[in-house]
Image 1 (tube, rainbow, N blue to C red):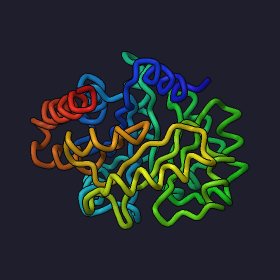
Image 2: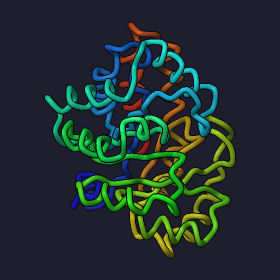
Image 3: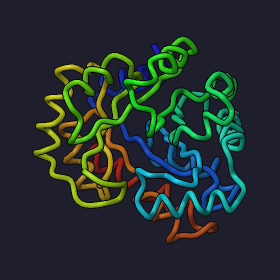
Length: 265
């Protein structure tokens, strides 16, 4: 059982919904990432998605785009991201860490090197936004063989064929994008999400997390009624932007604590 699967299993045993949180590595500063990761855990996050900075993050709205720009301006690349995970693992060996980003940085170092480095530093999986599940069965198999989960996105426009393919090759959990469009946009229709998840679960036996558009405790709690995990990214990045380098850690921990409290209410 992977670390991600074990985490979901433990949460289910306690009738709890997973809180999955996203930050961009290297934002707002090179030295900020590991303290922010620990702040997320202290606030009650169960899984951390650590964004690999990329110059053309096509699925992201303006908030995460700006985070990528700041991280790239700080000179942070995929090798630094591996370093952050290794540093985090010195004091936290249990919280799953998922590397989230795009194909280009992986292609540059090679899939085999990406997998080897992920294992070496203690990462648990990856989300590669622009890897279609139909075209990366070999990569998914190599990840699985190394004990890593390759997590795929599903959306309101996903066909039944796409859902079946994700069920075939995906690991860890499936990430349902609740809105048409980019991260940080719009408001969630929880009734529609519940209906969509019913269709997904006919094929996908992994836990299903829901993200895009969750901005407060009330929405998180409503989504938790129908999903196995609540995924929050843009709203956390907004906390970082508002607080700046000096206040980011405290602000992120406080926000995460508020979401966790709402989920457990």
